[in-house]
Length: 214
Image (spheres, rainbow, N blue to C red):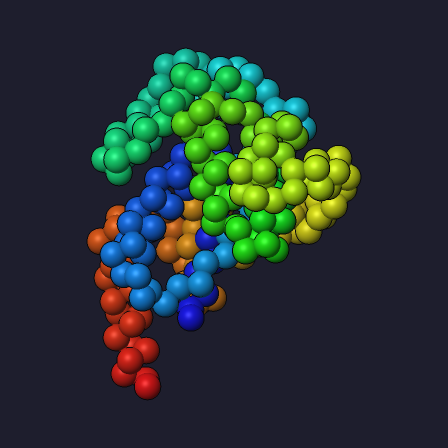
Protein backbone atom coordinates (compact mmCIF):
# COMPACT_ATOMS: atom_id res chain seq x y z
CA UNK A 1 0.00 0.00 0.00
CA UNK A 2 1.08 3.56 -0.70
CA UNK A 3 0.28 6.24 1.84
CA UNK A 4 -1.93 9.11 0.75
CA UNK A 5 -1.87 11.89 3.34
CA UNK A 6 -4.73 14.38 3.07
CA UNK A 7 -4.32 17.71 4.84
CA UNK A 8 -7.71 19.31 5.26
CA UNK A 9 -10.21 21.22 7.39
CA UNK A 10 -13.77 19.85 7.69
CA UNK A 11 -15.33 23.28 7.06
CA UNK A 12 -13.34 23.79 3.84
CA UNK A 13 -15.75 23.43 0.88
CA UNK A 14 -12.89 22.68 -1.50
CA UNK A 15 -11.91 19.79 0.81
CA UNK A 16 -15.48 18.50 0.63
CA UNK A 17 -15.40 18.68 -3.17
CA UNK A 18 -11.87 17.29 -3.41
CA UNK A 19 -12.75 14.29 -1.24
CA UNK A 20 -15.77 13.47 -3.38
CA UNK A 21 -13.74 13.60 -6.60
CA UNK A 22 -10.94 11.47 -5.15
CA UNK A 23 -13.28 8.84 -3.75
CA UNK A 24 -15.07 8.52 -7.08
CA UNK A 25 -11.73 7.48 -8.54
CA UNK A 26 -11.15 5.05 -5.67
CA UNK A 27 -14.56 3.47 -6.29
CA UNK A 28 -13.64 2.94 -9.94
CA UNK A 29 -10.32 1.41 -8.92
CA UNK A 30 -11.22 -0.82 -5.96
CA UNK A 31 -7.71 -2.31 -6.06
CA UNK A 32 -6.12 1.13 -5.69
CA UNK A 33 -2.81 1.25 -3.78
CA UNK A 34 -3.69 4.06 -1.35
CA UNK A 35 -3.73 3.90 2.42
CA UNK A 36 -5.38 7.15 3.44
CA UNK A 37 -4.60 9.23 6.50
CA UNK A 38 -6.20 12.59 7.29
CA UNK A 39 -4.24 15.45 8.87
CA UNK A 40 -5.39 18.66 10.58
CA UNK A 41 -5.20 22.16 9.15
CA UNK A 42 -7.25 25.00 10.58
CA UNK A 43 -8.37 27.57 8.04
CA UNK A 44 -9.13 29.91 10.94
CA UNK A 45 -6.67 29.11 13.73
CA UNK A 46 -7.57 32.36 15.52
CA UNK A 47 -11.29 31.63 15.56
CA UNK A 48 -12.77 31.98 19.09
CA UNK A 49 -13.41 28.58 20.71
CA UNK A 50 -17.17 29.12 20.46
CA UNK A 51 -16.98 30.08 16.78
CA UNK A 52 -18.85 33.07 15.39
CA UNK A 53 -21.89 34.07 13.38
CA UNK A 54 -21.28 32.94 9.80
CA UNK A 55 -22.65 36.07 8.15
CA UNK A 56 -20.43 38.28 10.29
CA UNK A 57 -17.46 36.02 9.56
CA UNK A 58 -17.97 36.08 5.79
CA UNK A 59 -18.57 39.81 5.58
CA UNK A 60 -15.50 40.54 7.70
CA UNK A 61 -13.33 38.16 5.65
CA UNK A 62 -14.52 39.22 2.21
CA UNK A 63 -15.37 42.87 2.77
CA UNK A 64 -19.13 42.64 2.75
CA UNK A 65 -21.98 40.53 1.47
CA UNK A 66 -21.14 41.08 -2.20
CA UNK A 67 -17.53 40.04 -1.67
CA UNK A 68 -18.66 36.89 0.13
CA UNK A 69 -21.06 36.05 -2.71
CA UNK A 70 -18.33 36.43 -5.35
CA UNK A 71 -15.87 34.38 -3.30
CA UNK A 72 -18.30 31.48 -2.92
CA UNK A 73 -19.76 31.57 -6.43
CA UNK A 74 -17.08 29.25 -7.88
CA UNK A 75 -17.48 26.93 -4.87
CA UNK A 76 -21.19 26.50 -5.63
CA UNK A 77 -20.46 25.93 -9.32
CA UNK A 78 -17.77 23.32 -8.67
CA UNK A 79 -19.91 21.56 -6.05
CA UNK A 80 -22.81 21.24 -8.50
CA UNK A 81 -20.44 19.98 -11.20
CA UNK A 82 -19.25 17.34 -8.72
CA UNK A 83 -22.84 16.34 -7.98
CA UNK A 84 -22.75 17.80 -4.46
CA UNK A 85 -25.20 20.04 -2.68
CA UNK A 86 -23.92 22.53 -0.12
CA UNK A 87 -26.69 24.03 2.01
CA UNK A 88 -25.00 27.34 2.77
CA UNK A 89 -28.33 28.84 3.91
CA UNK A 90 -28.45 26.32 6.77
CA UNK A 91 -25.00 27.17 8.11
CA UNK A 92 -25.51 29.73 10.86
CA UNK A 93 -22.10 29.57 12.55
CA UNK A 94 -18.49 29.22 11.48
CA UNK A 95 -16.94 26.94 14.11
CA UNK A 96 -13.49 26.62 15.53
CA UNK A 97 -12.47 23.24 14.08
CA UNK A 98 -9.86 22.21 16.63
CA UNK A 99 -12.25 19.83 18.37
CA UNK A 100 -13.52 18.33 15.12
CA UNK A 101 -9.90 17.55 14.25
CA UNK A 102 -9.57 15.84 17.63
CA UNK A 103 -12.62 13.73 16.81
CA UNK A 104 -11.08 12.71 13.47
CA UNK A 105 -7.91 11.75 15.32
CA UNK A 106 -9.78 9.61 17.85
CA UNK A 107 -11.86 8.03 15.11
CA UNK A 108 -8.62 7.11 13.37
CA UNK A 109 -7.50 5.15 16.41
CA UNK A 110 -10.62 3.04 15.96
CA UNK A 111 -10.22 2.72 12.19
CA UNK A 112 -13.04 5.15 11.43
CA UNK A 113 -11.11 8.22 10.31
CA UNK A 114 -12.51 8.55 6.78
CA UNK A 115 -16.01 7.84 8.08
CA UNK A 116 -15.57 10.64 10.62
CA UNK A 117 -14.52 13.09 7.90
CA UNK A 118 -17.55 12.13 5.81
CA UNK A 119 -19.86 12.51 8.82
CA UNK A 120 -18.47 15.95 9.64
CA UNK A 121 -18.86 17.07 6.03
CA UNK A 122 -22.47 15.90 6.00
CA UNK A 123 -23.23 17.56 9.34
CA UNK A 124 -21.74 20.88 8.28
CA UNK A 125 -22.39 21.21 4.55
CA UNK A 126 -25.71 19.38 4.30
CA UNK A 127 -27.31 19.82 7.70
CA UNK A 128 -25.82 23.14 8.81
CA UNK A 129 -24.82 21.80 12.22
CA UNK A 130 -22.24 23.51 14.43
CA UNK A 131 -19.36 21.02 14.35
CA UNK A 132 -17.54 23.01 17.01
CA UNK A 133 -20.24 22.15 19.54
CA UNK A 134 -19.33 19.27 21.84
CA UNK A 135 -22.81 17.78 21.89
CA UNK A 136 -22.92 17.78 18.10
CA UNK A 137 -19.51 16.11 17.94
CA UNK A 138 -20.59 13.50 20.48
CA UNK A 139 -23.72 12.79 18.44
CA UNK A 140 -21.59 12.38 15.31
CA UNK A 141 -19.28 10.02 17.19
CA UNK A 142 -22.28 7.95 18.27
CA UNK A 143 -23.23 7.58 14.62
CA UNK A 144 -19.72 6.23 14.02
CA UNK A 145 -20.28 3.61 16.73
CA UNK A 146 -17.82 5.34 19.03
CA UNK A 147 -18.53 5.82 22.73
CA UNK A 148 -20.17 9.26 22.81
CA UNK A 149 -19.82 9.56 26.59
CA UNK A 150 -16.08 8.98 26.35
CA UNK A 151 -15.83 11.47 23.47
CA UNK A 152 -17.62 14.11 25.56
CA UNK A 153 -15.18 13.58 28.42
CA UNK A 154 -12.22 13.84 26.06
CA UNK A 155 -13.61 17.00 24.47
CA UNK A 156 -13.97 18.56 27.94
CA UNK A 157 -10.28 17.87 28.56
CA UNK A 158 -7.06 18.99 26.86
CA UNK A 159 -6.52 15.54 25.36
CA UNK A 160 -4.49 15.72 22.14
CA UNK A 161 -4.90 19.49 21.77
CA UNK A 162 -1.15 20.03 21.59
CA UNK A 163 -0.75 17.15 19.15
CA UNK A 164 -3.32 18.62 16.74
CA UNK A 165 -1.74 22.07 16.95
CA UNK A 166 1.74 20.65 16.36
CA UNK A 167 0.61 18.65 13.34
CA UNK A 168 -1.09 21.73 11.92
CA UNK A 169 2.09 23.76 12.48
CA UNK A 170 4.19 21.01 10.87
CA UNK A 171 2.13 21.18 7.69
CA UNK A 172 2.58 24.95 7.51
CA UNK A 173 6.33 24.57 8.07
CA UNK A 174 6.39 22.17 5.11
CA UNK A 175 4.90 24.93 2.97
CA UNK A 176 1.23 23.95 3.01
CA UNK A 177 -0.82 27.15 2.95
CA UNK A 178 -4.11 25.94 1.49
CA UNK A 179 -6.28 22.86 1.65
CA UNK A 180 -6.94 20.29 0.54
CA UNK A 181 -3.37 19.19 -0.04
CA UNK A 182 -2.71 15.57 -0.96
CA UNK A 183 0.73 14.05 -0.41
CA UNK A 184 1.35 10.86 -2.38
CA UNK A 185 3.85 8.42 -0.93
CA UNK A 186 5.36 11.04 1.35
CA UNK A 187 6.94 12.78 -1.64
CA UNK A 188 4.58 14.31 -4.19
CA UNK A 189 2.25 17.10 -3.13
CA UNK A 190 -0.99 17.55 -5.08
CA UNK A 191 -2.69 20.78 -4.00
CA UNK A 192 -6.35 21.61 -4.43
CA UNK A 193 -9.46 19.77 -5.54
CA UNK A 194 -8.40 17.61 -8.46
CA UNK A 195 -10.71 16.00 -11.03
CA UNK A 196 -11.51 12.32 -10.81
CA UNK A 197 -9.78 11.76 -14.15
CA UNK A 198 -6.48 12.98 -12.75
CA UNK A 199 -6.73 10.60 -9.80
CA UNK A 200 -7.54 7.70 -12.12
CA UNK A 201 -4.41 8.50 -14.11
CA UNK A 202 -2.30 8.71 -10.94
CA UNK A 203 -3.67 5.40 -9.65
CA UNK A 204 -3.09 3.65 -12.98
CA UNK A 205 0.48 4.95 -13.23
CA UNK A 206 1.30 3.86 -9.68
CA UNK A 207 -0.30 0.45 -10.20
CA UNK A 208 1.63 -0.08 -13.44
CA UNK A 209 4.90 0.93 -11.79
CA UNK A 210 4.27 -1.41 -8.86
CA UNK A 211 3.54 -4.32 -11.20
CA UNK A 212 6.71 -3.59 -13.16
CA UNK A 213 8.76 -3.62 -9.93
CA UNK A 214 7.42 -7.05 -8.99
